[in-house]
Length: 431
Image 1 (cartoon, rainbow, N blue to C red):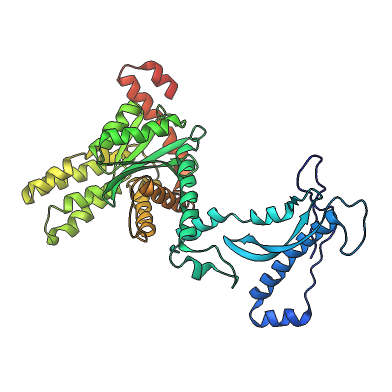
Image 2: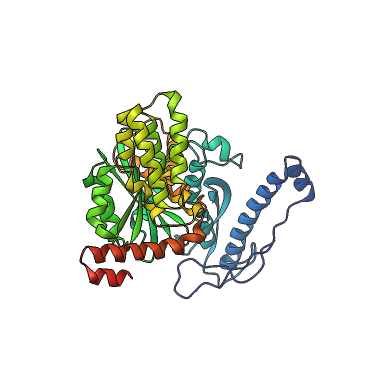
């Protein structure tokens, strides 16, 4: 095994070994003994020898070869002490040589400092916790070296707190100015007694990303306005025509209208609408009601879909007026995606808020491992981490190849809307 290092720049405190190979010697008998415990054990043993050999190579460069007189020597060997290097968050014990100077002080080893920071401990802990490990079983699952230490529950918790806080800061600070967000899904959920409202954006290439997250006592317009404020400050242009997918919340709609105005095209979740209508009916009627509503929403032409829904409304008036009123409420906004005349595959993807609902299910799965919730940013850190973990696993939107048609139709509809409202300047710019 060989490793090379560049020479130390002038003025640096700790010397760096010169460009020369570092060799690791492991007796065959010892290698075979380690191999009996598995190839992983052999690799770990060679790795530890490699680290110690590099430390010894640096000492030899600075203090000279062992047991050889050198009058010009500026440093000397100063024995050994117990040290460690970081491997996937584990502190692995190694034998660390020391270098003394004529004034009695110790000269630090640059190689040793690098081995102490070579592993991304916080990122490793964060990633493993997101994948299902808990603070309690982290040490038993992840420990690879029998004599490793530093993986106690409290230490793992400290690393995760720091890592999740950085994730939250990154989420709240990343720039959105360069993004062309075609559609935005905004929804809230009650999480452990607190309302959390999140926004997920879909860009022109079908890529989905978390835009923001806010915590509040209720899902009211002020809380949503705080979320939109944060998104706007990070560069998202609300004057751009955009499709907003909502579950029917009036607070969400009112807040978005104040920011986007005529540039907001609202699509009510068709899945929520079907559930709300069928909830008013007995089980014996729910099946055919759901079938007729799905058939209407699958129509390519908005006029056909509208005709089927109003015909169903007349039937429900005879059966259950409350169900008929539920169907009529917000009916036009459930057909926005049909009015925009997009491809059927894309219409299925943008006809509901399933994207953010599935993300909240990921959050619930990850966060159920927390036994006791505390104040401060505890909820925000965990939810932000869970959303970012879910984001890393998202595929592009189904039907993303048809997004250019949606963008064109949005711009045309926005220009027409502005012209009808008497704003020709905005209309011409949208066109």
